[in-house]
Image 1 (spheres, rainbow, N blue to C red):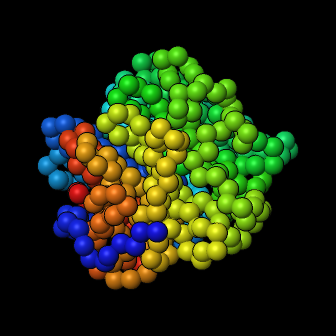
Image 2: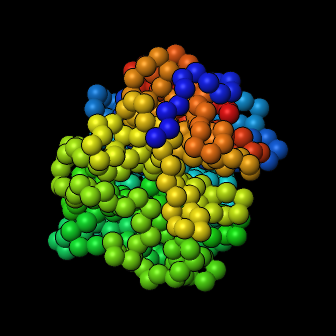
Length: 408
């Protein structure tokens, strides 16, 4: 295993405190709360939970940083009031994307709930409640992951509960930007007595969509297993494994492209709390210059007591797994970007003066880490590679109720 030296690497990221109050419920590992836009002026849109009208509730906003560095706070509206929901850490957090026409789309605060979907009626305007526009209006929805396609369409991955059937499935939807309408593409993952946990969606330069998700024992568990990958081609409507083999949707555990296989002692257990033992907890992906997937994920090895940070890449022999960090416990917060020449893996440690780090490969099995926010107790993170080729950071400081924008 590779142990990283502390305090090495390049300079810390340039950070700005977002000038709006943040709620303590603004914390998740699966979410996509950040989007960027612009190759000239660079805009950042940071969806977040703000304090609610009373303790135990939150309101949903978008902190917008324009190309000149000026901030504005855009409310997500439910009729004439700002959308407000009950706190539910790890479930009721927002995901955002900007479509090709410049409209914001926000999915907020769903935990086996009906759709809570908001969209701008004007370019850059405050999103309004458009939940009735979604397919499957009676669905019970959790974990919305959202991304923008090269043509301006949006793709959405969620978990849909079918509890009476003994499964919770991964379902993929598309926003047709030209027609301003949503449609269901397919149920992409389903297995009896298992639940799907969405992780990430990323488009490559060919216009193909790379999909990442985990499985747990039905109905739910804090510890997941058999991290899985899938590629979807919008041009053909077909799904593929990483080696190009076509697969039929939905994939099951017997047909899925499994990145991290079960360890001999690893077992599916239904539990509201962490049951211990080996397993996965949170993952993200990117693609390299050849459109190959690069995955960063947290995995607790057999016999281990903490979650290590690992990288998975696909080579001629299949999935190649490498440990990046295993010196101490990490938070359920991870991300990865591709700079054009190297992967950057972002992760958060559970303790210490410095919490948020980036690791880059320095050759072979060696990795070098950089502290991103020295002295700040960051607990959650999201990263987006902007069209200008800069990593934009979304850093959450729960103890001090602060949200930071960063450039790296």
